[in-house]
Image (cartoon, rainbow, N blue to C red):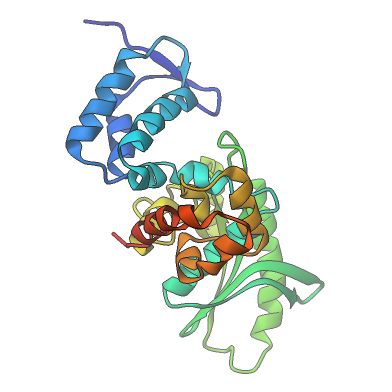
Length: 280
């Protein structure tokens, strides 16, 4: 029996390579089982002790991109969220769009008067009697987790806002909640504290089967940074114009011309963005 190959994660932790994790991440791309097995075989042939998860991802992504651009775009969702930065505003907009898709009326980047001071709130979301104040914690580095200090700070801000909300007419029956969304992961302490005080906590993979990755796949609200048909500079220009989703690009193709993309390339870009808009 061969010795297990140790790999280095983004966090610096060293773990044994688990082929099932690679298979599951490739299944999320909705590539065919045959292609997934081909990629796994090629990646396993190139593994060595001490290889990074980043390198494994790059190898798999390169093969996938050569076979199916749309599958490659789905596979790179986590990286696409990292590419939304550096201001964090496109991530807030994405969270607002996700909640709107789920039936909430939303406002992004709002100044809210608390009981003691004013607060700039990333997303306010309302549906029926639910009234949420949501903060978005964006990281451009996969190794950075959201620790317990963040929900502690957000909960104290929420309590100040809640006090003010409760004094408003028509709010007697409303359920007020604070929330925290991050594009990376929470530490176990952060989750424990969030659960204890009743914060809505959402990360890349939390809550299980209802994290960001699941909700983006279900809704088809993929960030335009997932597209393999756009250059990094072109993505930045579109983000600067406030375009965050493939869906927005598909609905307003004129933006491609506005940022100077050659007409010949429009078809491929729009075909891919249309495919990514399809919810699973």
